[in-house]
Length: 100
Length: 169
Figure 1 (cartoon, rainbow over the protein chains, first blue to last red):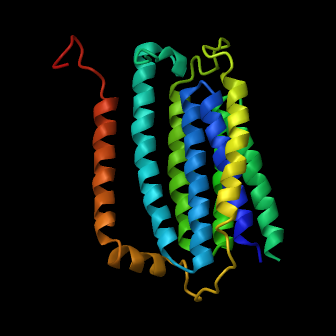
Figure 2 (figure 1 turned 90 degrees about the horizontal axis):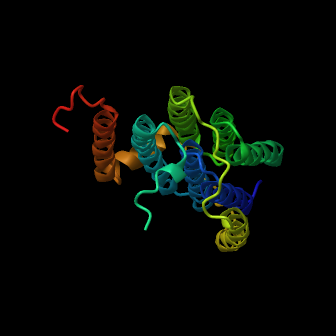
C-alpha cells in the first residue's frame, strides 16, 4: 500500500512547480498551464485525503474544481485571444498598463 | 504492489510538470501538461476514485488541453519569450521562495497524513459520487451549472469581433 504521504509529497511538488512557473515565465499561455498544474495538484490532495478518511466528500470537491477550472480556461483563453488581437503579443510584460 | 504503478506514474507526472514550466514552445508545454493529467488519472485509480479518473481524462485531457492547443495554433506568431527582464532578480527569488514554500507545504500536509481506512467496495464509483452530488451537494451542483452558463456567455462576449466601423462599443 502506498501511504497518503507519498501522494501528498507529489501534490506539493507539483504545486510548487506550478507556482514557480507562474513567477518565472512571461508567456501568458504557459502561465495559464502552470495554473492548471496547481489546480491538478490540489485535486490530487483532495482525492488522497478522500481515500484516507474513507469519505466521498473530497471527490465531490474535485468535481467542482473541475467545473470551475473548465470555466476559468474558457474565459481566460478568450481574454488572451482578445489581448493578442489588440497587441499582437501574449507576453504579459506588454500588458502592464495597470501596474502601479 | 501498488508502488509498481505509483512510482512510474509519479515520475511521469513530475517530468511532465517540469516540462510544462521549462518548455520553450507553448505546444511542448501543452503536451507535457497532457502527460501530467494522464499520470494523475492513474494515481486517482490507485486511490479508488474511478469516476474522478474518467472525468480527468474526458474533461482535462479531452477538452481543456485541446482548447489550449487550439488557442496556441491560433496565436502562432510571436509566441516565443521576450529576452528582456523587467524585474531583474525575479527568477532567482522565485526559485528560492519556491524552495522554502515546498518545504513548508510538505511539512504541513504530511503531518496530517494518517493510516488509510478500509473503504467499501463501491467507493468512488459514478453511483457513489452521484449520490453524494445529488443528495448532499444539490445546491452547489445547480450553482455549477450557472457558472458554466456564465462562462459560455463571457467567452461569446469577449471573443466577439467588434463590428466594422465602430458599432455600439
